[in-house]
Amino acid sequence: MIDGVKIKKLKVIPDERGRLMEMLRKDDDLFTKFGQVYITTAYPGVVKAWHYHKVQMDNFAVVNGMMKIVLYDSRKESPTFGQVNEFIAGIHNPILIQVPPMVIHGFKCIGEHEAMVVNCPTELYNYNAPDEYRIDPHSREIPYNWERKDG
Figure 1 (cartoon, rainbow, N blue to C red):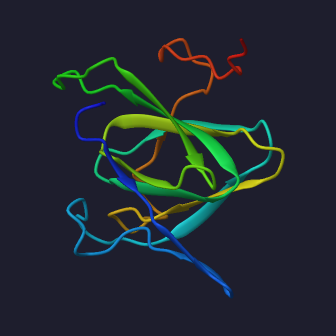
Figure 2: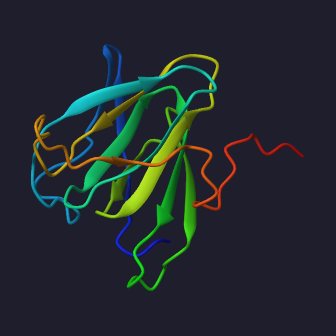
């Protein structure tokens, strides 16, 4: 596991009316602080990558569909520098993934329908000076291939 990345297995509580799933609570061991909450989606086969933050920590949970979430440790001082982590997350594996600053990340919708991610980052998005840096999803700078691994 990339240094500083944390995973929380999410508990789904169903009843005859539907279901409830808590993502992040302020009494969780991995809670740092609250910035905002937003939803992003991807259509089947779409890759949304790569990006990273210098200050912000992300807390992702896939709440609809299935996503492949990939992290790359670009921090030269990290004991896991250069490592890649891949997570399959969503309705069949409800987890929260905490991504520290400077860990490059992206995701791909791997289901037949649009997938939805809820993010609870530690920082408020600054429209005038966003803490968001992008790298081409197929850049050779990151040792990862987004193609499906059959076999």
